[in-house]
Image (cartoon, rainbow, N blue to C red):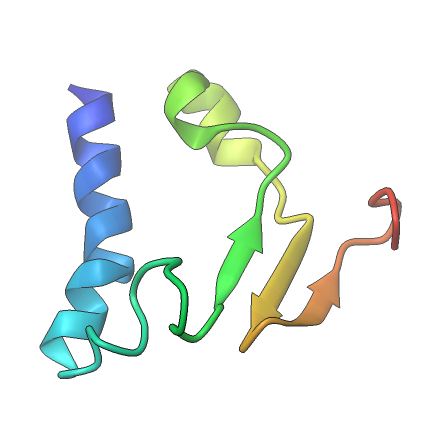
Length: 77
């Protein structure tokens, strides 16, 4: 059940959000020619337990392909 809810959450904040803003041709998924906004996590959120999911810390955030945040201690920071 958690996997389905997690998929719905990610869809709502990515593809779904882009569609609702009429921006599905330029954002919402990682495709060639689209704006590259994404967040790096240390583990696959679909492969961890609910308790582990709650404590995953964002390692880096990219907006338009440019890194705008990196957590201290992240390799390559």
